[in-house]
Image 1 (cartoon, rainbow, N blue to C red):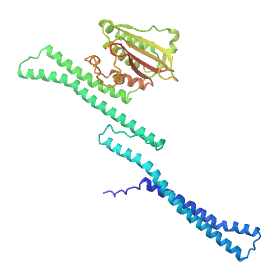
Image 2: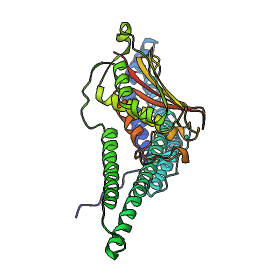
Image 3: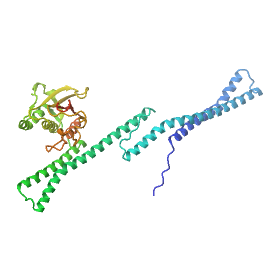
Image 4: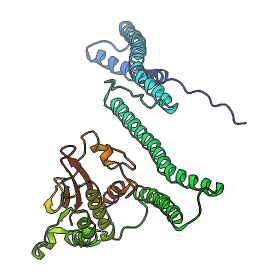
Length: 380
């Protein structure tokens, strides 16, 4: 069995001991110097002033000097110790209180009280920065825990429906109520395909957020990525009756649209954005893609290129905008993910864009007023 670890002294005690050591060392040094050098200097000055070197008065004065010096040092030591105790108590109390509160808050947070936070005590920049860092950490962990719970809930919801459907039909098969036919076979295949897609999407979003997988960066003209995405989704847009407008590329300005990126990954991001816009834009609506070679659309001091995807669809409520990139986020009924996807496309897209050093943001004037997604990548 390992030996019991001795409890460390409190902060106030260590401060007091430290200051006491400094005080004693300083006074000991002063006393040593004054006892060795002071009398010689004092004796020399007395002789230079006319006193006889062997006179009794000179010896008496020198003894008085030594006694006065010793008394002054003793009084100084006493005062210094009292001041050291007072200062140590005050400083220790000022430091001990916020640190004790922080320790208690950390213990409560570890016990599951996710709402606990600590105030900024005003006891110094470092202590306040520690409180700010603790609160930021607590917010991050609480948000991650909430996302984890929502993820488990949504995954369970997504799996519950196909499993319940398959279980009901299996019961019917066992009871002889229904017979196995091509229609039932197709139903089982569709449900299995749906669950397989969900598992694949969960794996994909985890890989994207963890940054696993290589990026094959190369110089690419973003207008070519836009053209490829337009070619891929033009049929789906036409089938739904939604107009898709893309910019025409000017070969003379290709350098302004060139970035260092993985064309497959950025193409995946743009395809996700266009698919999302199509899903939430009713027939007769429009989706417009704009390519903006500009300096620092998202970061003023860094040149970059932006692609905006603007739709005239359902729009996004202000309280939902901060959550649109969270995996499996369910917003209003109109924007709930359906069987066309598992709700992680935007999450994967933002993770891929961040790996390129860019940003992906969403904006909307509210429900029914459309939305705009802006993909920004740093320039060369």
